[in-house]
Image (tube, rainbow, N blue to C red; front, top):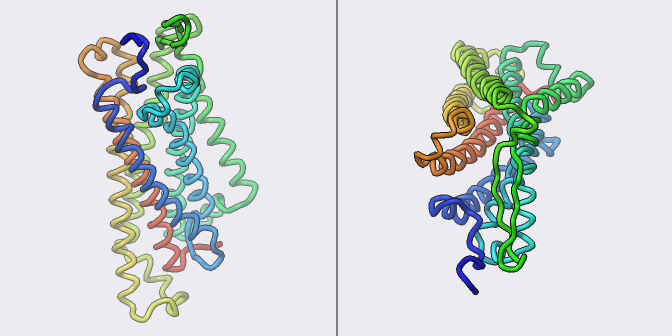
Length: 320
């Protein structure tokens, strides 16, 4: 078989290969452990936990996001990339799968923010927290989240188009992905990219910082001590409440730093669409590493949200 007919890994570089072949499977393993703990706690009627519904939705979204990334990882294993049927599935599904990943990621960001807001409202004993309980208002919130995410990311489904050709007597598919300037003008592409970057990345990062800062300040004013009388039976000593508070503050800090850092990095792909010449400066390798960091950020965000919700539930703030 000639070298042109050989089927190599479906990765763009050596760095990408090792990330897809080693790092991503490890990330999936860690995610599985986090999800197991969340499902076990949220589905147990005996567990007191804040933001139960939102936490389950966030978990489902993370599973779906990792599912959209699975074909790319499988493409680094020889028993997949050597099969022409898989290669054709991978190439033809890459554009819609990546677009779906963008949609799910936008929803995941909004739900993560909702969890932080709900936790803050429950610590504040605000009646607005009832909007996140399983009722009609929560369904409306989910619908608004889905519709908003679709409106912001739908253009990804038509942003690129696939050019195909065949080699080796039609037995090997080769492709090229390029911007679909027939459906979207360059000015429209830049507008959509900039809008998504601001609404889905920049604004959520700012909101995350502000909400969690207000929540941390609220906790430092010993707001949890007010719940001590109603949940004294849960603790042997009053210092237990203070220990819980310190844990919550730690999770708030980890969540904020991880969320902001990883999602600001996800601004980089938009730079490529705005400044295509960056691709000539090894930008593809930067994107590969950035995606891996972003995936890690999603795992830490999910785990931090889960632990924070559990700790708040332990001090009696869960209402359902």
